Image 1 (cartoon, rainbow, N blue to C red):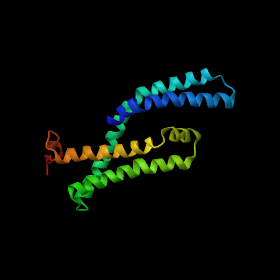
Image 2: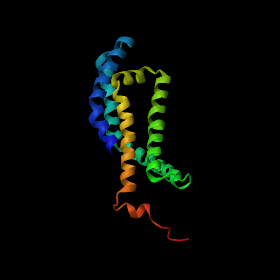
Image 3: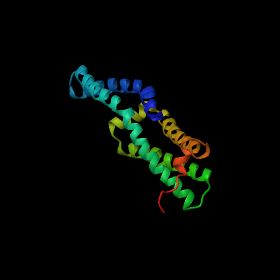
Image 4: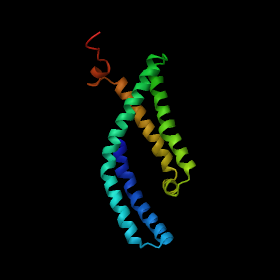
Length: 160
């Protein structure tokens, strides 16, 4: 949910600026009127803006479940401590879903990705690291703070 809110709060103005810049670039390159390209891109982005926050919740729930399994594996099979497994899981999250994706985006040298990376500048690094820090923080809260979720985490199987 945090990432979905960040998308709406932080990137909405960035997306509007990018639409204008892409429309100008495509208009001058292909000779298509600026307003046609801008209107079509705006229509596409309006659909994406509606779907993105919902998709982020679903996507990060699945990623959280997979990384929760990884954290449990690190703790139980590799005999690491609770805090060590949480921190290692957070680091793996940042490396896999941050650094590797950024390296792939740079390696592709796609003009649109290059524009996005150039527009975001150093903000992209903060965004990638912040999502990993938030994940690690929430994972720590779930494991270290007693709450109603404790019954789910410590539930015993009904049949042996």
